[in-house]
Length: 329
Image (cartoon, rainbow, N blue to C red; front, side, top):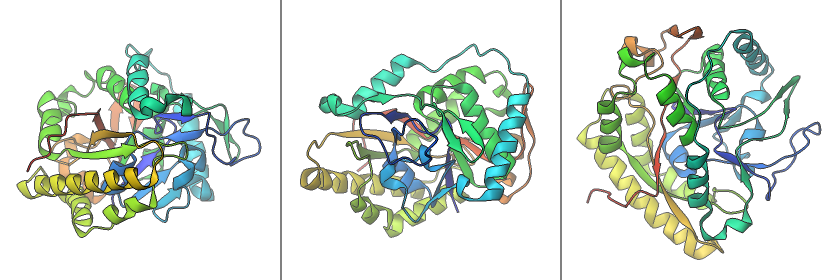
């Protein structure tokens, strides 16, 4: 199973104009979470694991491949332990911060000409998960590291920890020196990931969210299942993998264009370019173990005084928005 984890820093933002159903009566608000690349997540992962329903768009909460850690008592307790451990450690003062200019740019592109239909902010108010009270924000580096810590504490193997573009760019800068030896963020590997294995897909955003049941016809294609297996097992990009990505991209554009014309009142479509980590390009948070990580070895990895304890991968999933369409023919 290839899984994505969407936690405290996972949603790009929250739509306060179009709230989701209230999950916990102690929550004082219930803005609908907004994800940056819904179709990419649907195509690349067998399972989407959310910290709790409050971090999942309302129109995706009943999908059979969506799971919530908060639903399982043992997992919820482990989450509490992980957050307590993280908060008990000392943290360096961040020298990089997520860019609110980038947040505004991406938000505008996602909303399109009907921006008055939305009210997207980057954070939630306090959310309750059992005995925990947390606040989601994709613009918090501490939240991003908390998500990594949770993935490590729960032993979420074959799992990419998803961050939005602003947080990802800041983390790339913040941890550049600490990760220099791993080449995790090296220009060569980032370029290879973008050029050789980029899955370019269209996305939509409406007041109800970015999901439509018609997208399942793409997710259910045989080549999409093959592509997910390729992402899980490939050591490096291959011609076959690139061909799969291009064919899936073409099918996705055709399908979403049809859905937008037939069902959407405001058919604004924006492109997202993103791919989860292929082991040989963008390694796990224990890159020294290379492909051995993918078969379940425990791997301590220390970033200064921050220690992460397993093979959960850290995926720069969203690479760019609104790129010119350059799918290979």
